[in-house]
Image (cartoon, rainbow, N blue to C red; front, side):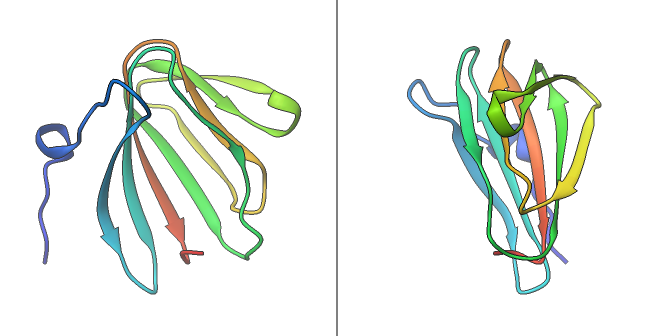
Length: 105
């Protein structure tokens, strides 16, 4: 077993988003991304089979899709999609998200 407190260990950065690798195995990957207000993870996709979930732990922003389509995202929201679907995140306030990818690319 492994325990990690992402609130205590997950960094925020002034330039670019903060990243904390929570878990990485052949079965799934868990990553904590922290964005200061106005930061974003550009829309991208992965050319593999699998699924992705993004959980907003705190803050507000937008889930981004193809053609920069935006879906409002706030604390408690969960986005689930195939990993090949274009996805990204834009923060409005400081924002913490937890991303799970299964299986990892």
